[in-house]
Image: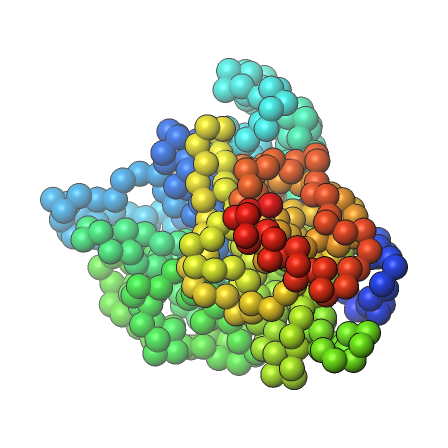
Length: 475
């Protein structure tokens, strides 16, 4: 599971749509992320896709940061493994967890080095090789590091040497701001783990230390059995995270099985939401006054984006909207998984949202819609040069599947995936771990997406272009 980030300004007044100009004012910069690991191409692709299916990479209580937001690439225990062995391992892990451990400055630097070694995608710059990176580790750790500040400076220089503008260091204060991308609202990170029978169960991968779930008694490794009485069997991590969400300071009841051998327990957890709604919407009329248009502005892809957009779309439909405008101008991204799930709201079952690519450039994995669309009405997506990352995922998915026309300016062109990892002193690193290509197999990195129209077209032009697109099968 993983995260994608964006830092957009809140509380701005959105101007009315201008028939002659689809441009919009500038916003502040931001980033987004995701997780993958380099073992062999098959495992790497599985991990990259699963990395796009979750929430913020949070500090784990027992595992090193290199496994944050990742499913361990070790095969699950075989049927011959006894539950007694698992329980012994669990007991040992508990002893390791409760025992004090001094984190040295060298440990922090080595953590950051390990994360890059396991996960970094060079993206064609050819500055990174396993051999040169191993040499760098030897050079850096050959002498003692006297202060934590010095350790952080070394990490900054080490990451800068990669030549990737998106791979960077986060101070503890900067990392703490990432809590608003917690999709659960209770500070929990889930992963889908296969059991001995081939079924999938949901396990707690990580927790925000002293966050709501941790304070209530949920621990890493617990299996989630139900949420508010809804059975977790057969559900994805994203579906369960959606069930965990709710109004701030309300309670959710989670039934968990502690570890592999422990008892089951129903635990009440109070939600603490730090995210603000990124959705603004209104109903407008077409120029002839005969039709209603549902206008939806999405400022960023945070933990509330999909839920609040669904509410807005349903309300606009109930008010009689027959056309929709999705405004992604100045939306620099955010949680990539939120972008993927929002794109699915408009797509038919089986249609491709994106293809993910890891260290093996020849191996592409599609992410597809699993259900029927919430809205099938003609759609305009407004874009500009600050439409980036998760926003571009949505724009290209709807465009390439003949669901929307793009109006405005060429987009930013950021098709890379980053993941955020927390280090053991509360600081963190953002690392490029993968990339995506559009349903039409276009790499938008550095190129962006060219819109269909510079200015808002008449709706009759929109419907005509979408009909022609569907007739020919693709753009």
